[in-house]
Length: 326
Image 1 (spheres, rainbow, N blue to C red):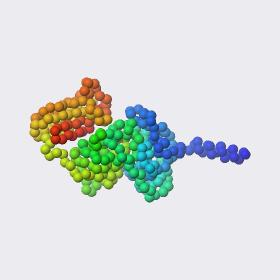
Image 2: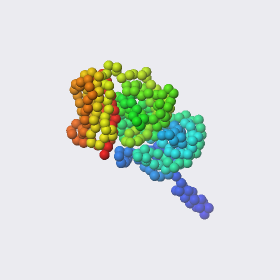
Image 3: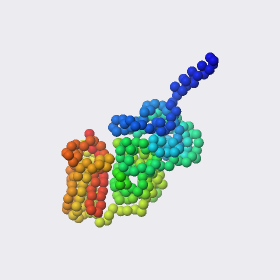
Image 4: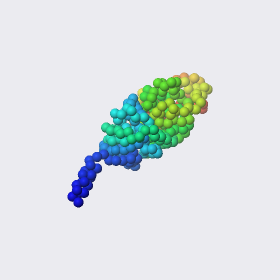
């Protein structure tokens, strides 16, 4: 009896002093929003052990960073592993990871990890089909953070910016596509993003950064283009831009027309909701500047964050992102 009690006590001690054994779903799933409209893990800052299938290797230039998922994939079942120290893993490897759950500005990660290879050659979980609209709000996008997602039948509404981000629309809203795994001009042939271009499928790992969710294709094979569709050649729009961007109090939206045209300029938030209409009328063949003072249709100052301005003519429309800051 004494021996049994000693063994039981030691077992309890080992269990209590080791990492929590959890599924990825356990780590990620939450219904409680935190600050800044994020959904932090309930295991934040705790050491955990979990297993999964590697879905992608390398991110932001780090060869030992990887993404992993439960074999069935889906909502709440993927997570990003930061600085594992293991550069030998490949997609399809089954691994056991022990690390600390960290919220990096709202993005759930496993850090300070030890990784053990359990098996290789497993099927990589299938991506989950989502809409652009779902990725615009934390409450609908958060379940897919860290997972493989798939967008279908999208149209480019903004070319790559200086941060490698570009934006697409599937009719339900606007989604960001990012270059976390490879630069589009580094592949052969280079991938050129143009407004009006249509993509049948874009697959990628979903991250969260600077208040936006972004889809990061792993390789060019994750991007299937429909036959290229150019911006309407009859469009009168020569250029459109805003400055400053980011802006504090107000910003100037400038656009040039090659012939007189009826132009509408509207402001939208990240949820796809129209904030205000800045212009709606006929403009001459010239360069024009429309100022936005950061207020909505009621004259109330809007919150800091990401907004889109959309210029429309009878033949075409173009949207661009801007950032209002404190």
